[in-house]
Length: 130
Ligand SMILES: [Zn+2]
Image 1 (spheres, helix red, strand yellow):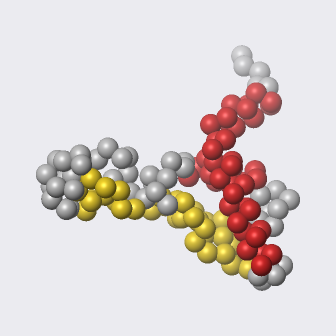
Image 2 (tube, rainbow, N blue to C red; image 1 turned 45 degrees about the vertical axis):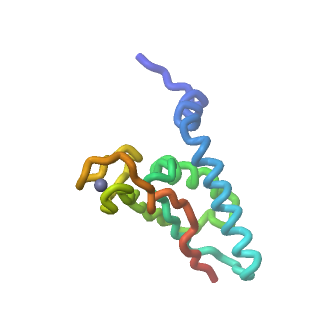
Image 3 (cartoon, rainbow, N blue to C red; image 1 turned 120 degrees about the vertical axis):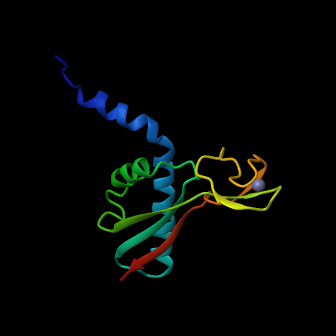
């Protein structure tokens, strides 16, 4: 039999998302600054773009945001996360291809020598407010 300790469960779930928590805090800061400078009274929706090469785990970010928005201007806002594929361009044959793990070889010539074009972004795309 296993008796769950609430505190322990909290920490077990929590430790892996420290990175996402600081990002969530960052996002809230950006939105709060925006609200101030636009005299917004209410934030209805925020759209985020998270590249698959950004190093941020979408589920962890959602969980971190759920926790972090309490008592902030984002508490009742809808938060949408749009994931963007990683994209690379081969330095040998110039083929562009989807690369979601940094290690994908060029599908045309198998070269590993490529540059990342997209997928590292992590940003607030739009803010809907009253
Ligand atoms: Zn190639």
